[in-house]
Structures are given as C-alpha cells and as structure tokens.
Image (tube, rainbow, N blue to C red; front, side, top):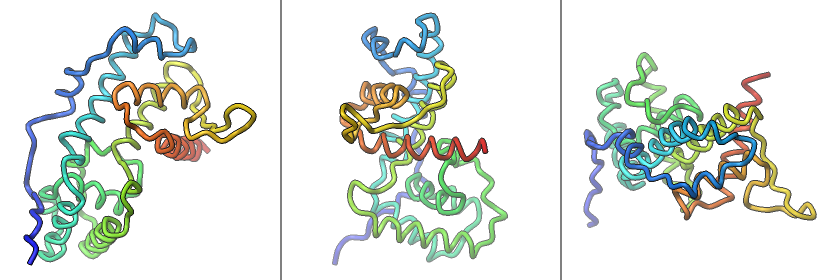
Length: 227
C-alpha cells in the first residue's frame, strides 16, 4: 500500500519575496537588453522595479507555491474537503500551491498570488468553497505535465507588461509573426521581446511559447478592463 502523501498544511517558510529581491544580481550586461524606447536615465528606477517583481517571481518558484508538489496540493485539498471546515483559518493552513488553485477557482485568474494569505475569503458560502476545492482537485488530476497553469509566470508577465507601459509609454502588444510572416514561438513585438529577454536573463530555461501565451492573455485582460 503506497504511503500517504503529506499535505504539508500549516507550513511556513522564513523566506519572503524581499529576500530574493535583495539577493538578485543584475549585471551591466542586463541593460544591453533594454530597448532604446527606454532612456538610460530611467535605468536606476527600472532596476528597482524589476528587482521587486523578479524577486517575487523567484520567491514563488523556490519558496512559495513552487516548492510544493502536485500530489501535496491534492492531498491538502483532500484533507480540507474531508474535514468540511472552510473557514478562513482552515483555508490559511493550505500549502500555497493548493490555496492558489483554490483561489483561482473561487475568484478567477488575475489575482495577486503574493497577497492571497491576507484575503478575507469569508463570507463565501461553504458550499461554494467546497465546490471550488473539488474543481481545483480535479484540475490537478487532469492537467497534463507541462500544461498546468504557471501562476508565477502569469504574474511576472503581467508585472513586466505594466513596467513596459510605464517606462516606454506604449501599450504592450503581442505578435508571433517573424520574417516572411512565419509563426515564431518567441514573441516578436517590441514589448514581447523585452519581456522575454528579462525573464530569460533570470530564468534561462523558460519556454518562449509559454511567455507568448501569458502575454496574449495579459494583453486581452488589459484591453477588456479599459473598454
């Protein structure tokens, strides 16, 4: 009989996003990636903003939701559903990966994954939380390897899209049309190339098509919010 998976409820890590931001190494070579749209005089402020958002991303990958396995998230949701206690105290005991998927099912995408612990989930009815927990559990069961939503990447792409707009004065767009209109996995718009180059600098193994997908979703959500 296989050993029961530890749901790792109630765990906390001493690491916080600020620790990762402060330890981030940004060399002079990084600024060679910044397009001429952003003047050098703004590089110090740009570095501060990038340090903050990339620090949060690295926290999510290494000390936050990313440190829990899918099986551990499913086990935590199993325990929550079995106990039938959906109060804020019980929800706050979930490991971050389980809580993040539960929150996404409750509130939809686009929430700030770094503020979830402080959200007043109640007075969402228990039946609604229970149904969301079951949907979250089913998602983990059915998601194929490599296809599970990467909340940390989603958040980072959105943050970088906002940074691009603030510093360049241009709304972020996405195009995947390369030379001779051939489709490319890497984003081809100026904003997309900037966002991918920043992510690659700190995470060389990132899959370009996932950045394109998240940028497409962010551009869509941004435009809808302004209609």
